[in-house]
Every structure is written in structure tokens, then in C-alpha cells.
Image 1: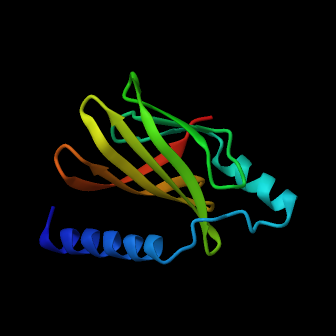
Image 2 (image 1 turned 90 degrees about the vertical axis):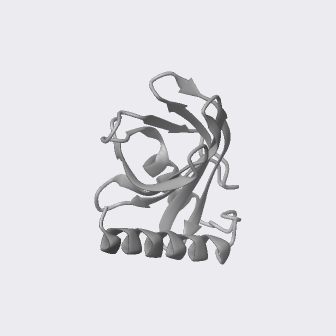
Image 3 (image 1 turned 180 degrees about the vertical axis):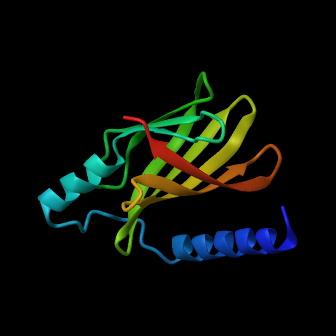
Length: 139
């Protein structure tokens, strides 16, 4: 990775952190049930990281910001926390993994509706490194 790529990556992480810190957690203000249902349908499904075959399965999305998620590499990895929220007109999900070799690793992802995929960052806690990642819909 070149210095310029590292700088851009760090700038992206800093921007994502600022957005997360200053965004309200609650999504219960969604007053239109049809719009809320549309959001749920956008998130639900199986998503795969093309760079390694890791699979994130999202289901049971609720208006309070909770969701159920499963993660596979290729075997199941325990998901300790999973939630979603609206940031302006975009949807963000956060997933925390707690298992052997996953001591609090996290995904912070934004849904890109134009590309029907998630883009964001994976924090690998054991190595204390952050990587840019994407997840593409498989189902």
C-alpha cells in the first residue's frame, strides 16, 4: 500500500468515525411503515466479501435498530452485537465478532443502494489493523 493509499484509507476511517460519533443511534423515528419495510428488505440476505469468501447473513431487522446477523469464515463465528442505523439517507450496519481469533473484531459498513452492496471497514482486533472491505449480495 502506498503512502497516498494509506492517507486516503486513514482519512476515510476518520470520516466514518466522525459520522458515527455524531449520528443518533435511534432509528425509531421512522414514521412510514412502508419505508421501514423497504429498509428491512434492503438489508436482509446473504452478503459475501469477494476477497476471501467471508459471509455475513442478515435477518430479522427491527425498527429499533437491532438485527440478527450470522458470520461465516467458512465456519460460524459468534456475533456478539449487530445493529443498524440511518445516517442521512444511507443505512449503516455494525457487527462485532467475539470468538477464537476474533477478540472484538468489528465491521462498520454503509449500504450503497446504487451498487446493492456494503462498503466499509473491518477492524481486525487481534492484529489491531483496519481494512477497507465490501460485501456483495449473494441471495
